[in-house]
Image (cartoon, rainbow, N blue to C red):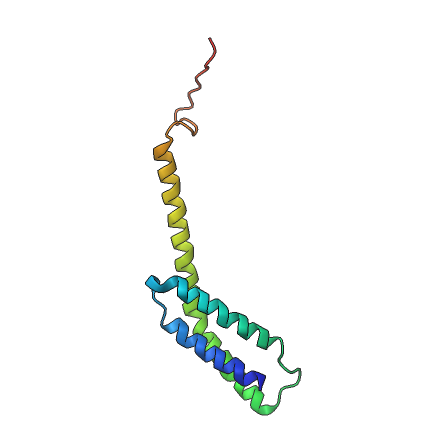
Length: 114
């Protein structure tokens, strides 16, 4: 049954998200992507007219999805924040290494020709 496999993957996804640590981000993201890809493939195979048992199981999958949504958004925000900090750090280092490449703060223009 396709929906049962989706439920199992959703439960696995919930366990994975609840065990997230910042130190193990790269392996976490790789495993998360793998589980999400598997689940997406199964979602495309869902029957058009589910039975009553499948509807009940679908409601449980939706409940798991609602529980997963908040932590996934927090993880996404954390990654975006880290990327912004990295970009800021990179700009600061570049300004420190090459202080004369950018525009001057006082608007001065120095003509090299005489």
